[in-house]
Amino acid sequence: MRKKFILDSENDVTCEALFKRRRDIIKGIISAPFVLSTNFSNAENKHLIFQKDIKYSTNEQTNTIKQITSYNNFYELGSGKRDPMINANSLKTDNWKLTVDGLVEKPQTFDLDELIKKFTLEERIYRLRCVEAWSMVIPWIGFELNKLIKLVKPLSSAKYISFQSILDRENLPGQRREILQWPYREGLRIDEANNPLTILSVGLYGKVLPNQNGSPIRLVVPWKYGFKSIKSIVKISLVSEEPETSWNLETPNEYGFYSNVNPYVNHPRWSQKRERRIGEFRKRDTEMFNGYSEFVSSLYKGMDLKKFF
Image (cartoon, rainbow, N blue to C red):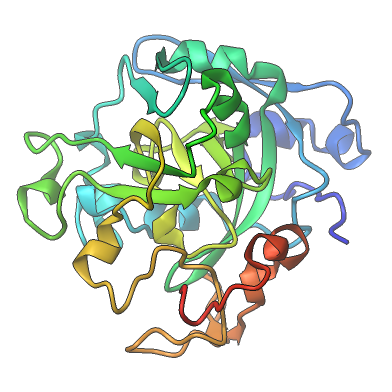
C-alpha cells in the first residue's frame, strides 16, 4: 500500500508557495485545496488549484525540478535530451484548443482555460514514477482522463482512444525533419484510458507545465513507457479500432501498441530488467507495470504480454 507522500523540503526544487507552506502540508492538511499563483499563459496570471492525491502517489523522493525540465524526450523540439529545454520557446501555447470527437454523443472543442476551470476542484498533485530509457519521480498536477471522457458521452462502439499532438512545422524545429510521421500520435484501449491512474497533466511542482515537458496539456500513463504519454495534445478521438501510434509505425518490432513496463520482455536492442533513475549512479530492478500492478494488472488478465507488448 502506498503511503501519502510528503513534498520535498528543499527550496531549490520546490515551488516557493509550496515551500512556504511545507509545515502545513507535512501535517497532512488535505481537505482544503491549495491555490497557487502561476503564469499559465503569456498574457495573464492564472491559478492552479489542486489537492494532494493519496491513493496513487508514491512516497519516493521526487527528482529535482532541474532534472525534470532539462533532460527530456520531445522530438518536436529536437532529438537530443537537452534540445527540448533549449528550444522550448519554439512551442506556442497561447489560446490552446483541445478537440474531443469521434464515437461520442457530444463532440466538443475546449478552450484549455475553460477546461481547467471545469476540473478545478478535481485537480490533484500525483507523485508518479515515469519510465523512458531512464526513470524519474515527478509531482504532476492534473486530473483523471476519465473525467473528460464522461463529458463527451462515449458510444458503446468506442473501444479505443487516439491522441494527436501539435503540428507546427514553421516553429517546431524537430518537425522540419522527418524523424517521425508528424504529427505525433498515440493510443490507449478505452479501459486503460478510464483507469484513474491515467491523467491529463497541466502542471508539475506547483507550476504550469514547462514547454519542454509537454505544455500546456499532456497525457501521463505511469505504468507504460514514457513515449506513450503524449505531449502538447490538440485532439483526442474515440474510435472502434486500435489506432496507429507514432513509434509503432516507425519501428513496429521495437515498440508495440501497449508498451507496458515489463522487465520480462526485452527491447530488441537492450534488456529492460533494470533501469537508471536520473540522479542515481546505480541501476535498480524494473518493476512489473512500473510498480503499479495492484491498480492495472486486471486490465491484462489472460493476455500474453510478450505477444501484446
